[in-house]
Length: 136
Image (tube, rainbow, N blue to C red; front, side, top):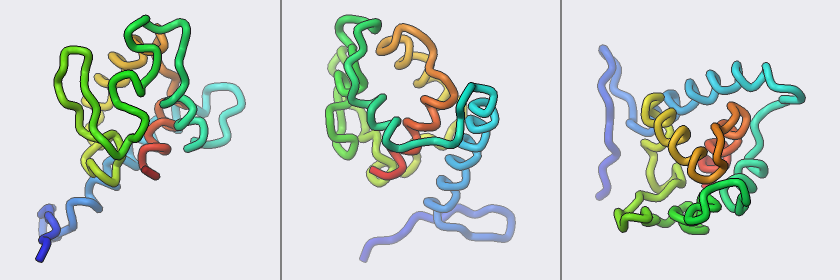
């Protein structure tokens, strides 16, 4: 029998997945506020997020031209850093705590967008990426 992890908040016992979903949604809501300031924003798109994940960018660093350079083409599988360190799957279905800690989300987008795009990601790109990974 598989046990579901639970989180105790005050007098409530909630499944850990529900808490993670709420934390992830709070991050997406914050990104949506920022993205509304960008021209043409009408909502996040998993299709644009997928495109961001698989596209090889010519402006990025030669050894990391795409997210798939380290994370592989299947977000449900793990990846490996250039230094050989294992990376947990990017897909929320496989790593439910992904994209739930605002500090970690900010840190990894800052580092990886610089490596792949040679610039910071926009709020729209971040929201699209997370939206794509939520469906994986």
